[in-house]
Length: 174
Image (cartoon, rainbow, N blue to C red; front, side):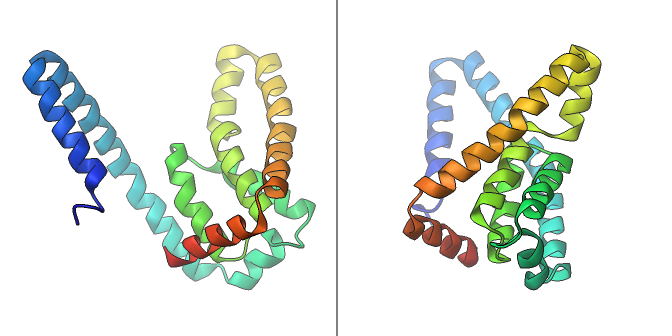
């Protein structure tokens, strides 16, 4: 148990040391840590609920058909749509990516999904439209989309097949 939660224990010890050295800084660090924990605790349960539904409701064959090795452009588009429509911080994308891998989604499409989640979210695009103007928002989107695709294909090409297989095996065990 100690090995599994060692980072938590190390963080707790470091917070205690900071608190003993500088009480004000320690309180600030505890507040920041508590805020991050509450934020994460409010986001993770709905994501896992959706993951359970995805796992039960969407058959593996359907995922392979639309996002698997032979999905082509429709897999890329679907990866972008799902990633862009998502809400929440980037750490929410990784459990979903693991379920995608369990369901047989092509590695490139998983990477595109993560890239879309991190940079092309619809709410972020709407915010940029209203705050920074349409020229900025559309330009950034038009640069990001090919950039995500290029990065995904390069990573898929340069990561050895054995490493990708290890990632899929690890996802399967989650």
